[in-house]
Length: 347
Length: 291
Image 1: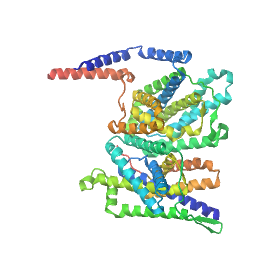
Image 2: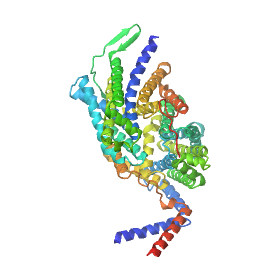
Image 3: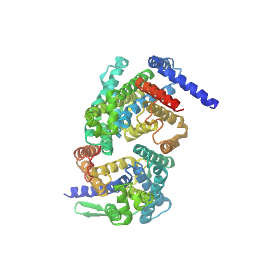
Image 4: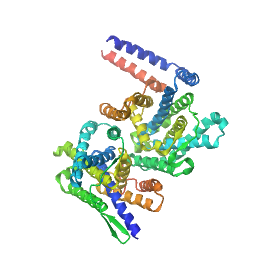
């Protein structure tokens, strides 16, 4: 074995031991939150870097939540930007027009939550056609939904119409983004590895068979859509208060395409993949910024090449070990031991 | 009455452009079960070819149209060979994402080359006849007639020629057809060439009817044409034509009787209702699912 590979193996085992440690997640969360708080209060990261980190967080929320529908449930939803728009508008209307200016900071989580709930209610409505229509036809339903949201927002003068809405204070700070990102990853990861999540996977593999195995497919679809759109709404609220300006054109089909690209870049049905995809896509776009307009030529080219040489994305259908539940790790360990025993016996 | 006829004529014009683009979607889908999301951008490239040929080479209408169609068809075949062919056995979504990537590439490449919206010169002398209160322009008639002719030619090719038979056979069963000696790769390339060529023709006509073109014009029109294809029943060529005329009709109707900003809302809501009532489109056959 070459030296570098041995060192890599050693590091990997160390990393696995670290992530398997009982208090790894609480320690990681607290450390992350503390880092974000310190970064935003003492400003040892400059504002530009902080903004990029905020966008990374928002994109992680969007990608992980879309992965629930497109990756784990196997549908093809292209309307995620629509849910995001609803969350953004509900949250901003609350902070601009309803909440008193003094208590903005305290009531901010409420506004974000309201945005999520608003998006979730609409997600419930979108889930209903998904009982009958599947595949490309469901893609059209979500696409039409996304366009309807955009057009409706453009026609309501009370929210600014096509001019958009402004007057939000910059309430989205790094700690809040970290909190909501961690929450969305936690909820969706636990959902996927719960009993319910097995139902979601069974719909992807074979809907009729899972119906016969007494999975309540309608209920599963509704919950998946509601949870996914809830987090898209939350991401929208955070996005609106990070940018301090929204208009309907921001949430058109191009935004949905962006989210789709992040999901499939990272790989479907993988929480870790979604996080990696969102981070790589967001940061790469920032790094390539000096190229000007040619960066948007280079990005799709890289995406096409990635798809040709690695059609399942970076982590497609695989999971980072730290997101796997303990029982899977135990099964894997037992399986390895058994395999070793059989190979030893045969030798 | 004249107003209604006027709007019907407008609807036919818009609908025939939508139908031409929708045909490209539906042909590719029928043969590869893949949604070619770059198709709307190929339509845009067609309009830009038209601009290029008309402004820099001073060609007249007929050579412009033919060369644009040819150029877009070549581009379509190149894209199929380079980007889609390696993914034929990959999961379906990777092909879709590749198509989205190719579409973004075409948009942004055009944007990098020509950052400002371009104005297509008038290639044809546009005469307007007034019949009572009705005014008919020669351009409108040309667009409608030309697209109908193209559609009839396509229908003939698909239904009556050997290549068309091969196309229908491939969309029927992909595993058996190569055993019968059908050159699958050639037929797929031909399908792409015809589908994207029609999209290019639609681009030229759209450029003549609405002369200001920009690199992002293909997105909205492309997605709308995709909706037409699905409404007609995706994979069904006659369905795509019907879907195109339906969407064109609905859009013009809404714009005629309501404020034009409501056009998209009403059109898409109607389409949603139609899809909920008939989940497989108008001419699509419901496919029973098997376990």
